[in-house]
Amino acid sequence: MTEEKVGFVEHYFDKLGVAAIRLTGPLKVGDKIHIKGHTTDVEQSIDSIQIEHASVPSADNGADIGVKVKDKVRQHDEVFRVVD
Image (tube, rainbow, N blue to C red; front, side):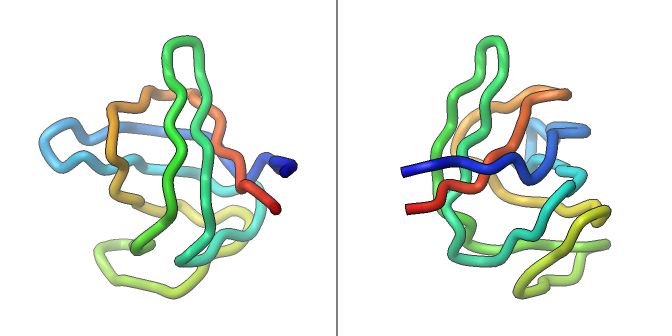
């Protein structure tokens, strides 16, 4: 199993449990991601991706997306796509 960096967390919305992520690579619904930082270590599948409050099936390099996360993440945490 390998991981490739696909972005970083720009902001975390605590009440919503949503991470705002700036992508540096492609990501799609169903992908497994790993968010890593100084105190962060979250692995999960992506159930939905939102761009400006609209659900989309995938997003590419440069997009700002919102992803619901199961645990708290922090600004500047790195986002990796897990590749089997």
